[in-house]
Amino acid sequence: MMWGYGFGWGWFMMAFGGVLWIAILVILVWALIRWLERKARVPGPSGSASPSALEILRQRYARGEIDTATFEQMRERLQATEHAPDASQEVPESSRRNF
Image 1 (tube, rainbow, N blue to C red):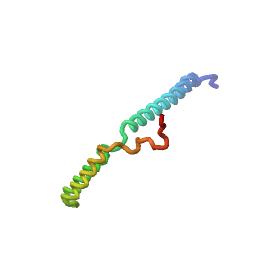
Image 2 (cartoon, rainbow, N blue to C red):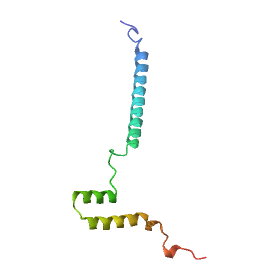
Image 3 (spheres, rainbow, N blue to C red):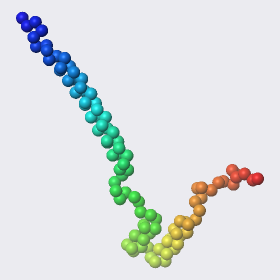
Image 4 (tube, rainbow, N blue to C red):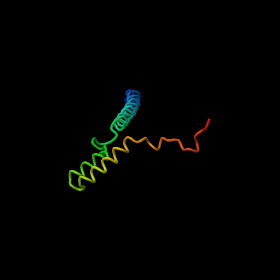
């Protein structure tokens, strides 16, 4: 009979198992945080910015889809709307206070 023989390493294995699980959890949390930071930093593929309306107009003119008169007319319209005040920021007449 082996009274207690072989049980000397039981406490070590139990402690090692607990530390192992804690280490695995720490690594998983670290990996999740890194993944979320990387995802937040890169909003999309580079070059995904859409071209402006004027750039699209220039491309269409360069490809020959529109003639010079149409290009000039559309360009003037676009440039006029760029310098016009933004209508979405105006306050409606009914909500203005008259003092």
